[in-house]
Each structure stands twice: as structure tokens, then as C-alpha cells.
Amino acid sequence: MAKLKVTITDESNAVTGEYEIDCAVRPGLDAVAYDTAYTIDNIRAAAERDRYLVDFPEPPVLSFMSATYDFADPIRTVHLHNVNELWFEIQNLLSGARLNLASARMFKELEDGHSSTSQTDVNARLDLHLDKLERFHLGIYEITRIEDLLVRIVYEFFGDGFIEVDLSRIGWEKRLTWDSMKDSLNKRGKLVF
Image 1 (cartoon, one colour):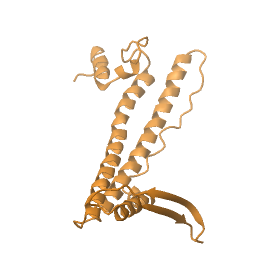
Image 2 (image 1 turned 60 degrees about the horizontal axis):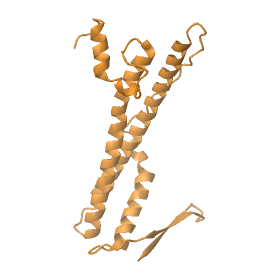
Image 3 (image 1 turned 90 degrees about the vertical axis):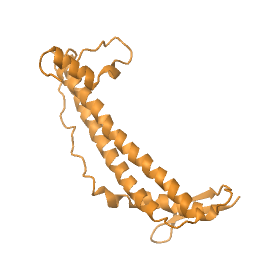
Image 4 (image 1 turned 60 degrees about the vertical axis):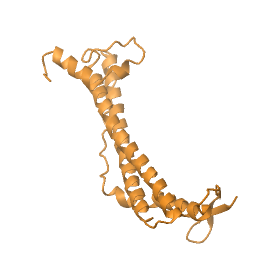
């Protein structure tokens, strides 16, 4: 089995990291050429994705309110603390989506660079395509996860009685959905869908 040695050096040629790769035997494919190209592409994807970060604005700071403890209403204090933490989680999800979407754009650029019909390019293009889709799907998942957190913020901010949910049931958080929020609002006559 062929081996590749990846060595990373700094500007003064001091070695800052090394790794040895075992090139798996793949019939009909030059494993050394493929593993070399794919490894370099992955290093480039990590090192150069910042070029695409400018296309996705940095999310603003969403978590800055400090909840002071109110002895008269400790439950309300806990709810407000949770709201703050949920905004912080939304900020983290936006940052993660930004990084994943920028990485997907970088993988797309690298994928397009393998345009020949050689087995090395065809396989590298396929693997880079799958990497691109994985990053894209992670970014979209992070964005859609925000929807769930917004319902939770409404629940926490307005208190236990706003969205009807049985807190004694295991997994009660999963019952906090857009539909349950709309149903609760409709029962109060505040919103009609």
C-alpha cells in the first residue's frame, strides 16, 4: 500500500505538523494521484474558505441582556435567562451556517477545478461534490433549527401558560412547534390562520 506524507511548514520552513496517509488500493485509479489531489483540496477548503465569508455577513450579537434575579417571581427570572441563552444559541447557529455555506462555496470552486475526464479528476470531483453538499446541508439545517428556537423564545418570554404544553411529559420541548403556537394563539382569539 502506497503512503503519502503531508508536512506543513511555516514561513521559516520549521515543520509545524506532519501526517502520513495510507493510500487505499482502488482498481482503475491512481491512488497516490487521487489522495494527493483530494488532500490538497481539503487543506485548501479549510485555508481559503474565508474568501467566501464576505458573502455571508457576520451575525450581530443577539445575546446581551442579563436577567436579574427577582425574588417575587423566580420562574420569570429563569424564563428570561432561557430567552437570553436561546438568542445566544441562535447567534451560534447563524455563525455556523455562515461558515458552512462559505465552505460549500469553496468546495464548489475546488470541484469545478477538476474538469478533465481522468479517473483522478472524476473521483475528486465526486468527493468534493459530496463534501460541498454536506456543508450546504449543515448550513441549511442550522438555519432551519432557528425556527424551533424562535418558538421556544416565545414560550419562555411569555411564560408557561402562553403555549399549552404538559411539562410533566418527557420530551415536552418537542411539543413546542409552530402549529402548537398558532393553536394557542387561535384559542386566545389573537391570531387567525
